[in-house]
Length: 476
Ligand SMILES: [Zn+2]
Image (cartoon, rainbow, N blue to C red; front, side, top):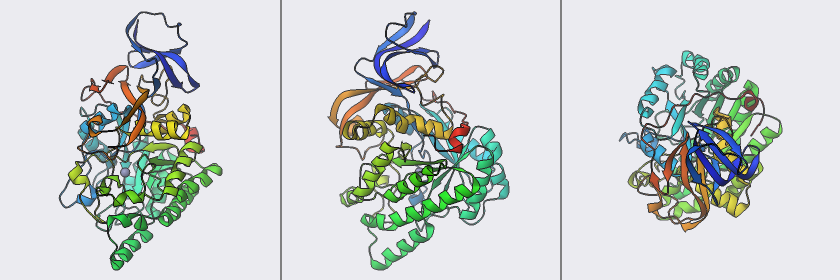
């Protein structure tokens, strides 16, 4: 006896797109079959006629329960997994990968245990963490870097660093190139991947100084600080370092044309370099900073020009960029609107609920992106790069029964009431065509027609292991 059949939808499977029925037993998909073949008894049938059925989204970049870096003095934290994972499910995303931040004095297992205390029992969606490391004052001990091997073996194969402090007032964030090379060596030797927020610290900090000198510190100048030259120089430096160390590399939140080009060139040489962009980098430009509520569009590094925005879509369509993420910082509107300047505007985006719907509208409807490519950038590629595939990111027998049903017939202007997260959304007023209407997590319907049916604590911590092919050459 089957538990569930999703019948008659247009299904995006690893082998193509077609009208198939999906059979689920327990938490897994057991068959994807031509209509009429599945005749077993079944507890529930979902009619997906007219809907597009895709793997539940995999969001590779969220920051739950994180002290907002521009609000360190007040110790303001972002929302927790309760809020972020619930918004994920409403938007068709069933897995998120967050960050466990190392603190001086800790070993990495203490770091991971600290994050698990926050997530355990408090997530609606499945989850894992990248380990985030720092060597701001050269104070990252060798013993911590040597733990990278054990941490990978324990199921956490991705490590995040920043090559900049991002703003002048942050107490601690960046990692220097020497420590980064050392980490890459451990990562490469043990089948992990390095995730890097790459900006050139010297350029960024000099531009803060220069714009202050010139009296141009309003937010609208953000892209002069976090600029294209910085992304270009830093991406190429970090890619070259990865090449020296034999490390796979995941460059987070690519924002500029030059970033796309650097990644594309590296992939052309056969290097295992992967790029992520954000749905709001692909939708807004620095001109949006000048709107009355321009702060709500900002995430560090910065929004760039229309030309850059188009280059990000070309990267997503053409294969230079692998994933579309959010850099989610769940905050109230009041906290998002804090700060007026290039140094104190709150970064991060309230975006996980809109991610798949925006990708569908902007990619599939407006730019003719194939459904296979849409699934690749919203689910499969993040699962592959971060070691969750094929358990996640695929509609295939043996995979978890994580599904999102998108209704391509929905045409609407998004209102705040369409969202289930914060008291604002950068997407309020955005016209969409196609929107997720049902989400299934490991065989359970967790969102149906705007109603949350999932329970807090349903989400499981997922062990991860990256396929050796993904670490050897550009595979997705
Ligand atoms: Zn981030």
